[in-house]
View 1 (tube, rainbow, N blue to C red):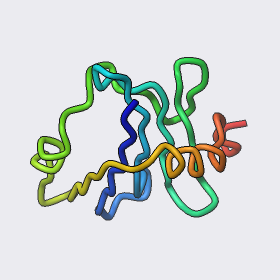
View 2 (cartoon, one colour):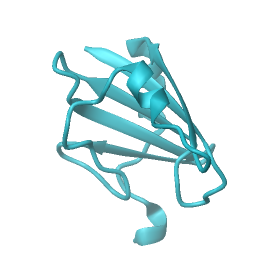
View 3 (spheres, rainbow, N blue to C red):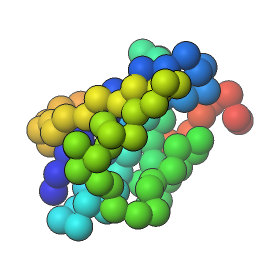
Length: 100
């Protein structure tokens, strides 16, 4: 497994500030935690999702992700440990309570 953190620098309130992904050997996303704020961390997996969904195609390399940056959004990606991913995942929720 590969674990990835992507920081998103933007001015949009409806987009996450960071994404944490668990990838299989083919770089398909298995689980994702999207951090919108300290109190709103949503998750997506093949079983649970809310406003956050898993990518339908393999996740590109860190270099390719960062090349997707634009004037509206700057992306910074890095590999992280399983423990770092699990820490954020444990704080995430499959449901957006505002939607209930």
